[in-house]
Amino acid sequence: MPLNGVNPDWMFRPGQVTTSSVRTPRKPEELGMEDFLQLMMAQMTNQDIFNPVSDTDFIAQMAQFSTLQGMNALLQHQLSSYAVSYVGKNVVIADLNERGELERIEGMVERVTFSEGQPMIFVNGRGFELHKVMEIIAPATKPPVDDDDDDE
Image (tube, rainbow, N blue to C red; front, side):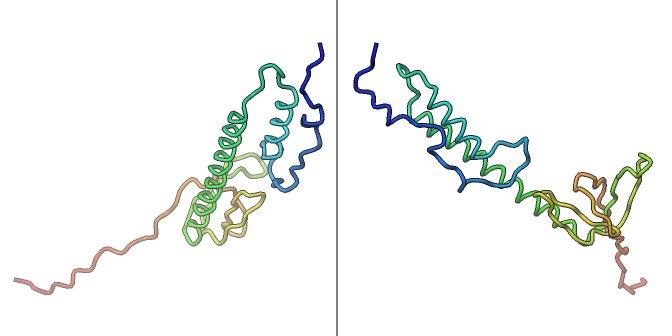
C-alpha cells in the first residue's frame, strides 16, 4: 500500500549531515558528539514511520549529551587544577620498577605536563601519572619560640 503525501526527498540520508566541526580528540572507547549524531541519524532513518519519535525526544537526548560533555570538561579542568597544585610539594610515589617490585619514590614535584589530556607530574626528573601519588608530605615546621622573658 503506497503512502500518499510522503516525500522521500524529505527523509534524512546517511552522509547528508557532516559533523567535522564537532570532532575532538578522544580515546577510542569514548563516545563523542560525532558518534551521538551518527546514532541519532540512524535512529531517525530507521524509525517506524507510523510511530515516529517526537522532535522533543531528540532535543532532550541532545541536551542530556551536551550536559554530559560539559560535566566531563569540568572534571578535566578540576583534575588539571588539582595536578598543578602539587607543584613544589613533597610527595611519595608508588611505582613498579622494571623487575615488577613496588618502589617508593620521594621528592618534590618539579612540574606538571599534560599528555592526551591526562596530567603527568615530574619527581626527581621522572614522569608519573597522578594516581600514583600515595602521600603528600607537609614541610617540617619549627616549634613556636617563646619570647617571654618574664621569670617570676
